[in-house]
Amino acid sequence: MKFYVNVLTFLTGLLLTGNALYASKLMTPLNDKKAAVNFKLQDMDGKTHQLSDYKGQPVIINFWATWCPPCREELPSMNRGWAKIKSEGIAMIAINVGEDEDTIFTFTGDYPIDFTVLLDQSGEVINQWPIKGLPTTFVIDPQGRIVYRAIGGRQWDADELLNLVRALK
Amino acid sequence: MKIKCLGLLIGLLFIQISYADISKTVLPDSELIEWKLVEGNFELKLVQRLPDQTRSFFEGRGFSKNITRDIANSCVFQTIGRNNSKDKQQTIHVSLKKWVVKIDQQRLPIKLKETWDKQWSDEQVKPSSRIAFRWATFPTEQSFEPNGDYNWGMISFGPQPGSVFDLYVEWKNNEQKKSAWIKNIICPVNK
Image 1 (tube, chains in turn red, blue):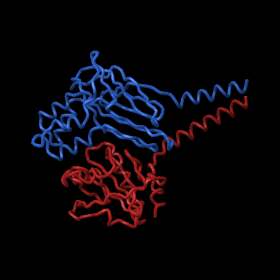
Image 2 (image 1 turned 90 degrees about the vertical axis):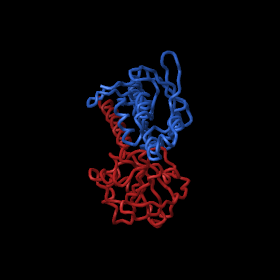
Image 3 (image 1 turned 90 degrees about the horizontal axis):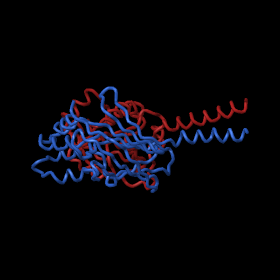
Image 4 (image 1 turned 135 degrees about the horizontal axis):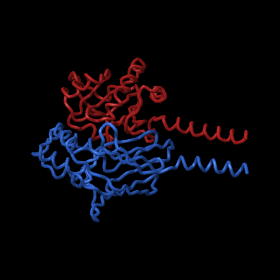
């Protein structure tokens, strides 16, 4: 009898471990580490930002839109993640695709975003990046190379995910 | 005896992990129907969208009433594809070009986002509307990597509201072709 209890305990443990791993969603490491395409975009205040301005530090770049449900689900966790990393020499940028300042301004009343939001109104930048859907997030290393990609939303305040970015410093 | 029981238990474990299914659920809040396909690491959800939902979404993105009516009446579903694998080798690839709508003994391709885009002139649709359409619709080709990749977007299957059709779904798991039929999908009508 004890044998069967042990076997069942082992198999249950195996299942639970599998489920725990299953629940943990990280990012896809990109082994070819291609150079990220530079961009020049304006933020909500009209200030111009280039990706090259951020060279020397890891950068998290998220492409999103206000009408995209998983973006809305993901952004609060990005804001919480930003609160954790903003003093650690890591940049976080949200590039809105195809919308104007008024739309984004209204949206941020409900979904506060404390990190940099850039406007790609013409879709020119997103067309140059390897993106199929929104949201898609990239992590750029201090040398300006794309090292991770996440298609679909993630929990950006999870330390196991942020630690991957921290390790790039 | 012990070895047989152990084998049986491990077999049961395997069955749970590799369980594949197509299910249909009425969503409690909206009363819309969701079809869900799970096979190995691949998960696909098709959720009905009322024609009015689709019409108002695209009108809000600057499309004309004529165009939004055409889109809304083409059986648009919200579609979510996901790779649930944690294994680095398990890449899933989906090509909507391989999917087939079967209705009234006819087999029809899906109306892809590229087909819609080509039929509109620049006078009919402004650039910002095209951008919204492109990114709100499901990609024609997409690879889903492990570690939680998923994507969502609208697919227009084509039939009129109220139609019932079967959908042939094809995908690749590490170059291994897989397929399934989802039967009796209902294009919703406005309530």
